[in-house]
Picture (cartoon, rainbow, N blue to C red):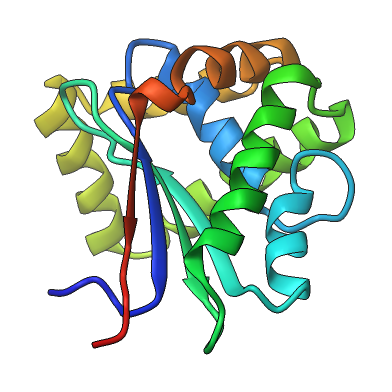
Length: 178
């Protein structure tokens, strides 16, 4: 399908390398959870100022290094450049300031909750098992990924932001109304 009109996609390549995946999962949650204060202020700032209706971030968890993607769903009449400016400022802040321990704990809790919530049905369990069997040859790699998340530190998050979320790794796509 087509990219929805008036949306902003910021992508960074390649991101998933070993334990970096767990660190990236924490930064994904920490940068888009929407809690005021700390790095998570990005969604609140972009959303509450009326620039975008929401912000999401995820990495394409794959067998090979893949993309880290941030998507902002623009409010009607707002320019993607406005959201891009805010998002890039928040990325820069994640590179120079440590995420608070409170925000780290919130991120870990949300990630763990999502894991268990997403294993409610047999089809969700099968998807989890099949996904990690396909990308790693062993479903226990998925379980280990979640164990690694508990060990991710604020310094780890900052290091990953500095290493991967660089302008030289960035591609920006803007959906526009026709």
